[in-house]
Image (cartoon, rainbow, N blue to C red; front, side, top):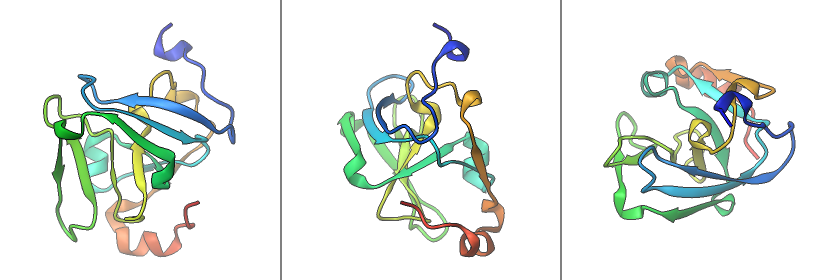
Length: 139
């Protein structure tokens, strides 16, 4: 099955998704629907192509690779940008917008055709302070 043939869950369907970094050392599960995926154009997200899925910590489980993660911080240092120190892929992190949650990179979920997602919302992270004031709260 190719990525373009991969099924994408219907909007609102909650299920457990498997995810990993590129080399597979960092593996995780996340239980969520894919009906609130966001693309940000800030300096770091735009360069990485991160597709955001923010979830409560109880819906996220790191299965392996804790010792293979490293963290990058900048600006306000609220966000904790974790990535695999071997392959460099950024599968999840603690976001500035919701520092009590986990932000999963939908591009790191197995079997998801991101082009088939029903909606990907855009967030103007280049103008973060102004944009966050208008952003709907996360569940």
